[in-house]
Length: 283
Image 1 (cartoon, rainbow, N blue to C red):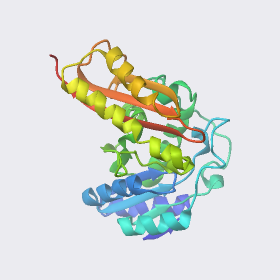
Image 2 (cartoon, helix red, strand yellow; image 1 turned 180 degrees about the horizontal axis):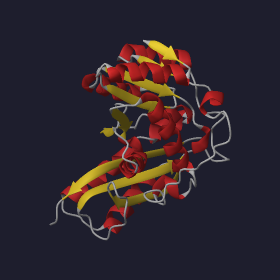
Image 3 (cartoon, rainbow, N blue to C red; image 1 turned 90 degrees about the horizontal axis):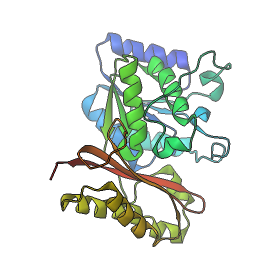
C-alpha cells in the first residue's frame, strides 16, 4: 500500500491504472477509521482491481459551531487498518493542496438537503459535493463506496452524480454495527460510559418501528410517536425522527415503496444518527 499526498501524483497514478483498463474503487473518508470504513474498503476490493481511500477532514462541511478542530484524527492507525483491509492507496492531501485559494465557483445542493441533518446544517452538503467533485477529478473512480449510516448523504451524492453525468457508480453499503446494534461512528468516542450503554436504544427503536410496519402499520405519525416514547427513556435529546421517500427524500402521508426512517439524538458531547430503509407494500 502507498500513501500519496500530492494531487498531481495521485492523478498520474489513477490515470495510469485507467489506461491499463483497471477498475478503481474509491472510499472517501475523513479518517479515524473504524469497522464501518473497513467494510467499505473490503467491498471495494471485491469489485475492483484497485482500491483508493482518501483521508481528508473537509472544512467546508463543518458549520461554525461544529467539531472541525476537535474531529478525531489518527493517520498511523488509519494507515495500518487500511493496509490490513486491502487498500492499495491512501490519498492524504493537505488543506493547502486541496484548497490553495478561495474557490472561484460554488456548488449548491437544491434538493434532498432541507430535511433530516441538512435542515439544521446549512451549506453542509454543498461542502460534501464540492470536495467530492475535486476527489472524483483526482481519482477517476469507477465505483464509489458510501455507508448507508448517512443515508441522506448517499442520496445527495447520487443526485449530484446523476445531475452532472459523472461516470462513476455510487455503491451504498449497509451500516456496520457493534454487537449491541449501535451504528459504528467516529463520534462514538465522545460518549460517556453511561451514554454508551444507552446508545443502542436508537437502533432498538428503529427495529421496533420495522416490526410495526411488518405488522401492517402504515401511518407515519403512529410510528414516530412510538419511537419518540422509546427514545424518551434515555438521557439524551431527540433532534429528529422522520420518514421520507428514498432516495428522493420527499414527505409521505402513508408508507408505500422505498422509505427512509431516520433519527438523530444528541448526547452531552455526541450527536448520533441512525436509520433503516424499508420496502413497504400496500396493505
